[in-house]
Image: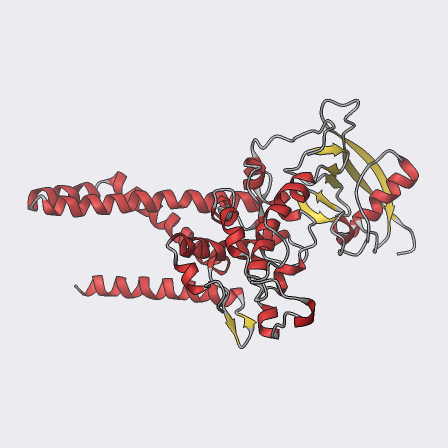
Length: 252
Length: 130
């Protein structure tokens, strides 16, 4: 295309020092076939309104910082292209279900400071092993048991997709529960008993009603809905004391 | 939590914001008809224990126009519920693998649909024969 086309981008603006509630502001943004929604926002910030606030970093769907609602759908804005919305307009809002700090920047602290640490997102070994005893070895088959769930980039699109999180903010939520499963499913880990209180609770897997949209919007195919719902079975086995028999301490 | 002022958007009308949520609500609501239908069947069983007159009265009630409309509606919604049941089954199923590779979701879903259609047809034929 010789000439750049122009698209209307509508952005939700909120200034906590002045506004009582957010409002939309429209911008005309020129774009080519490879202009991402994030680049559209950067154009606005660089040329039209320097006060527009939003998060981004890597520009290649790895860092997980640039998640936004694009026409009502949770998306990584670096991974979404303006050409796909033309000739219509693009409406960009901060990820829903999270408090808005300013413009498109959300308050992520509920996830990073509460939910994520609560599930102990690290390998809790059966017993402490000294460095001289060597590495914890694992077969490729054991690796495959959790690999998919370890691909989470904490972008929070799944929380924006989960109405249960919006309705009950105490719900541990898709990403944290998928990561809980990632560590429980790791053969080097023996920490499920330390995570069971969260997993078994109403705020854990039982807070999920299988809307399933989290898995749909996940840019890394983590499939949190599957991780959570598999653990409803584990939670039931735990309730009847079967899990302790299947995974005894010191053995297996 | 951030100590500065934030804006929390209301959840009111959330399920109308995305067609995915609308389908979820229809899926969940369709189970209500299944529950009512089950209660009707249980009442029938109870009436059977009360003797022939009670049983015949229950059957007569089933033949009323309102009951027939309900049963058509229930058939429709329960069929839809069965359809969606298998669509979400890959999420509720355990981690199924063949030679280390995860079983494709479509295999679980289509397998479920075929099993539902097969058993329904079988039950229909058996009832017809009797």
